[in-house]
Picture 1 (cartoon, rainbow, N blue to C red):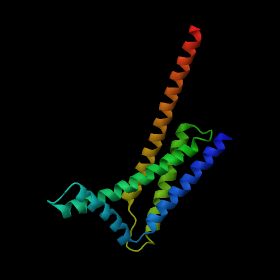
Picture 2: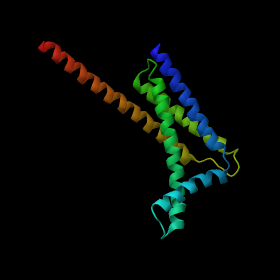
Picture 3: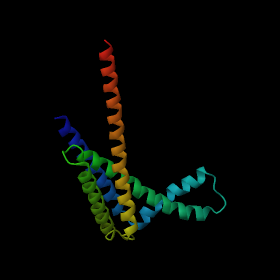
Length: 165
């Protein structure tokens, strides 16, 4: 029962994350560009960038856009891998399935952008998105490994305490 609830929660998170990605892709080029530019300008203001400000904003805007791609797909990778761990599937197969899912979703996301005014698909974005998914997978694997190590240490500690009594 607990696995079912966890599975449903992660499935809902995957759907919500996918809808957010879809929403960003549906933005026209001007709106999408303004969002990353606004963030970059705020960073320039916080850092008090005066010299080469326009260059900083131009480059920063691209960096922000790529980090946004990476970050939102990292989240998708986290939710997707956490979801698939609720099934009895070998780890290598899990990694392959979620990586393929990431590639397919990133590709369809870029195709979706064809239909958004002022946007165009980019193979570089598919690569960045896929790397984000893989990073998300690795984060979940790391957390699960840490959890496993802590559990083993606690069990060893309890066993030692019981043997002393």
